[in-house]
Image (cartoon, rainbow, N blue to C red; front, top):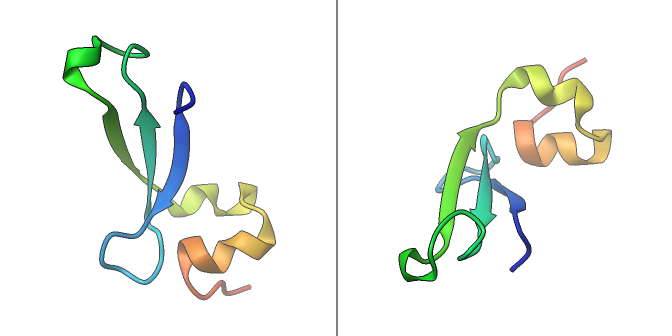
Length: 64
């Protein structure tokens, strides 16, 4: 695994409202602790910075 991998995360929803940061062992702690998964909310304020072709998958139907 790379130092940090960021992936959209939807859980049980149909659109991803969160992003997950996956961090491998040794990057943020000892190998014995394993990998870390950090889930962060994806606020609507970042929508203008997301490429238009990815907006429906992250924010649902894009209006405007």
